[in-house]
Image (cartoon, rainbow, N blue to C red; front, side, top):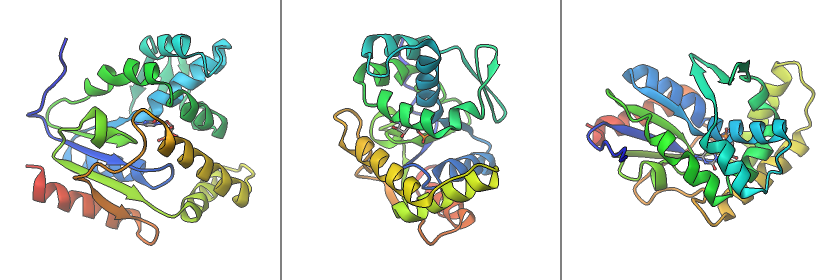
Length: 224
Ligand code: C5P
């Protein structure tokens, strides 16, 4: 089955972890009344599913099978795996680490491709990830690549964790962030990089609302 539906607009937001793209993507989707795809959640769910079932994260064939059969559902902002609410569980640092590992496996990426493209439904889609503009929706007319320094991103993650009552170490978060960026950027399949036609938005010194406005302005210019 082909899932190509090029007449439906897609805005892609790619970038490294904690660049703010998730929040920006959700707000842009709400402003336009578009659907929203958090593709990272699919990789996180795949990793969580493997961890729960004792499948090694480098067992490409078995992890790809889990990805293809993910019993995942999204209700408002809650994420379910079969009959379990895993909204918080998939946000754990260990699951993010695991997601970055399974995301380097070509068969896992292939297994998630059609599922992601199926989100392209009227009136439009805002898709957040690493390869939305380069691979999954390479024909999107509005592509944005969000960046911010590793220190700024680690600082945001630190505030989030402390705000939720967790303990956190800023130097450890900077190191994790750099390790994950290096893995996402260096992998052979769908590495983290801006599409040639993406708008580069450095959010190091930018608040969320300004980033939302910049994406909406780019869509107004190119997307319709
Ligand atoms: O965006 P988020 O931090 O939730 O993504 C978790 C991990 O999933 C990333 O570190 C990345 O390795 C992987 N990912 C990916 N491609 C995407 C989305 C996420 O490789 N489109």
